[in-house]
Image (cartoon, rainbow, N blue to C red; front, side):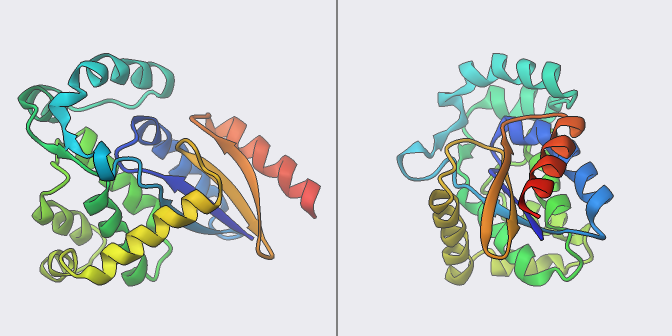
Amino acid sequence: MKIVYVYDALCGWCYGFSPVMTQFQEKYKDSLDFEVISGGMITGDRIGAIGEVAGYISWAYKDVEKATGVKFGSDFLDKTLKEGSAIFTSIPLSIALSIFKETDTTGNSVLFAAELQKAIYYDGLEPKDLQGYGKIASKFEIDSANFVEKMKEPKYRKLAEADFEKSSTFGVTGFPTIFIEVEGKYHKIGSGYMPMSQLESNYLRIKNTIK
């Protein structure tokens, strides 16, 4: 059985959900495989300067903090968001995840995805800062310079786009969305933010149903 976690690195509610997902993986890593898929929330004509949506983010982040307990960092709120020129695009973040999934042999994609979100929403990383992805990769003992070079290879953009297509094929309309995959069939565990107790309850209920 495998847990499929469809998320987007720029989804604020996914950022709020990342501690729950990492806790869930830690508890069930010995009995379940985990796959993270980038949903491609901000692509195409949605790509633009963060200043265009700063008004919305400036109050919406408070709802995420209140509901989930995560904190948005001052480097994001007082620098990236206020300055407003950083281009918000899911593509480079999704490329980074695709590189990691090909490179990693330890099943740490959930943790890597969480690090990507922390880099954006706490540390103020701009999505097009390729060197920043190298620094994140180095936390997982991956050569940072090599990782940055791979960020420029068309192969990994195609893999990221394949993730977007998977998300669409699953019928995902919002992030996060979590499935359990058993023998090629996908069963939705839930979508949107939920606490660990609810995620675990949903998982056990659906697991017992499909046995």
